[in-house]
Amino acid sequence: MAIGPRLDLRTSQTLVISPQLQAAIKLLTLSNLELMNEISAEMERNPLLEMADDGDGGIPDQPPEGEAPPEAAEPADMAQEFASDDGLERGADQDVDYVEERFHHDSAADSGRASESGEEPGFDSFAADELSLAQVLEQQAQRLSGTDLAVALHLISLIDEAGYLTEPVAEIAGRLNLTEAEVERVLAIVQSFEPTGVGARNLAECIALQAKEADRYDPCMAALIANLDLVARGDLAQLRRLCNVDAEDLADMLRELRGYNPKPGLVHGGGRTVPVVPDIFVRRTARGWTVELNSSTLPRLIVNRQYQARIAAHAGRGPASRSKQERQFLDSCLTQAHWLMKALDQRATTIMKVAMALLEEQRGFFEHGVSHLKPLTLKQIAETIEMHESTVSRVTSNKYLACDRGVFELKYFFTTAIQSASGGDASAEAVRQKLKSLIDAEPPLKPLSDDKLVDLLKKEGYDLARRTVTKYREAMGIPSSFDRRRRALVKAA
Image (tube, rainbow, N blue to C red; front, side):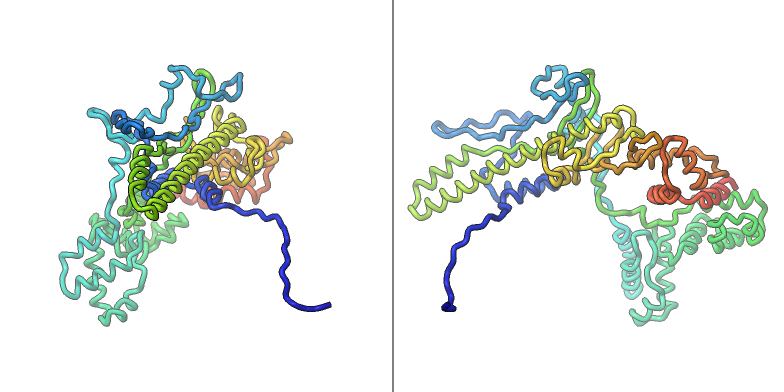
């Protein structure tokens, strides 16, 4: 048998994800803000794409004779009604009264238009950009000059967002080739800046700076601040001996101590607070439950056929080589525009399907609250809407639902199951909320131990191990019964 190179043809099947499918998958995972940025970038690349004006700006100009009008994407059903008797019904059958009940354009902030004269200003008018802590301190440091200004700016760069100096003075002095006394002197100037307490090296110094500013830093308060560990332990008898005060004076000092800010730098957080914009609205009407997509997060795109006709006419008058390139570019822009509008419509339809399935599965939550939240998995919703589990996972990422009980991330409705005493399953989130309600209702000076909480939860029908109760309590940031009692003692004092 001869050995040598040869060519063979073999057929095989492979699964290849096309670029358009990858882009469609990406659109599913985007939040409303990220979606708007993606669409804006696509409109910059594609001259045929325009945002449809659904406001009161008047009707668009008619195209010249012989040119096609702008083409709009067919909008997806933005609202569906979940009636108590008939299950799911299309929003197209709604009458005028029901349309007036839609609520995502009730305010100027929701509709995206400025408030009319006489109306209350929207939330965005209050969410103005503010200066960061470093910028506030640098402005105050401008009254210094020379070496003091340089040292102050260096110290400010080492202050964290809570307002504390993050490096020892000795290291700073060695880096700047200065004595520790010179750095301490400039640090004292920085510590006199607003907010009071900034530039401190530890919690005791931060509290002391605020007490000095309030002219309350006497020897008794100094002793109290020097023994914050005893305050944390609730050792009131030892504090009375160290501070040389009676119980009434110590109570006054503790009340004053609680009034100081342990993290003064957080007063200037910097940046802009971005409110959560829900993608889905759910509420109860006279007909039943209504699910509606927030149209402000689902932009309506159109293809400007007028502009397309003009570009095509211009391309026909040029040289053959240039005309061919222009026509190819125009065809690619038109194909991409049609695909994007179809992908957005499919995205809206998929989100609506998932929202309706969630409403069907978690109706008890919407009617009665978190105590009736059912265990739910992505697989259950995927089987209900006949889609893949990964698609449901992408839809529920970075999406929010607004209802009468608040605004919730879609993933909030997917919780693990806890075996109940009756043999059924209970939602882990419902168990956590029940645990929190038991702790909130406990006597402050006689807090419930984890063992006692286990017994109370068993009476409620939840059979949990003690370690599970401890895990849920710590996950909610609730301290142990010992720490809760100690804090109650300090507060009572």
